[in-house]
Length: 302
Image 1: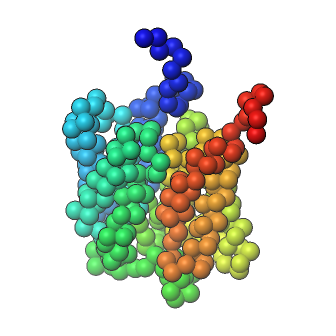
Image 2: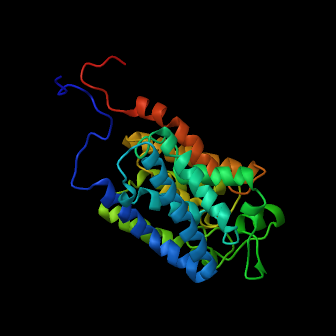
Image 3: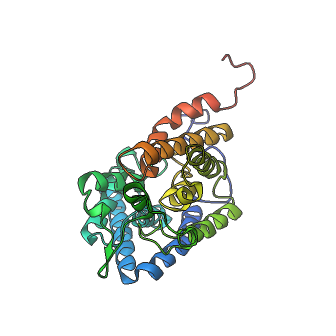
């Protein structure tokens, strides 16, 4: 049978950059955030990161083995998922929970849809959302080495106490492993931007919307930029190639929508953080966004 005219699934643009090369570049870009987490949370951060990564890679291997697919754990995609999930977790979380979260992230967030390139949601956020729903107390406990501290967003939401801006930026605050140092995240993002592996429109639209939205309603915009998971989510999760729009206008819309949802949840919701929910909700809208923002072919009827 002649297969020349069969339309294959995306992506249709070919380049010298393989999935493996891109994924390991993302791993490299996440290392500054990992090193920052180790600096602030010591050995506990190493344990959580390694557990999440091992859980993700092992789950990926098992699914590929059971389904008689090519074993491709060396492409780095499972490592990226494990790292991203770990960076969303509090340092005090039990290690079995981090492992279980990775199993859910890969199994339900990726492999159940067919594997890499087929998942409509960011897998790491699927794992994080599951853990938040299943173990809410564990996911909101911030005690490490006998020191207990609330996240900046929790302090502001519950007690009206603001955190020093410099501490927010460099990471001397309570929070999840990857939420504490905006500086480390920006360094990693700059590397991906230089390599051309990430688009700047989504993070700019998302961060800009949060800045303008919080300022418009009387909140401290700088605090909301650096005081939670916005930087991690906007720079490394909302920009996921698979679960984000493919068009320029679509990326602006995605970032704008995610930013608006963050503002609404943070200012008026019962939960102090809204980044996870905002990105997952916008993931559901990606097919619709792409449909109405893609360039029309010559002669195509609207």
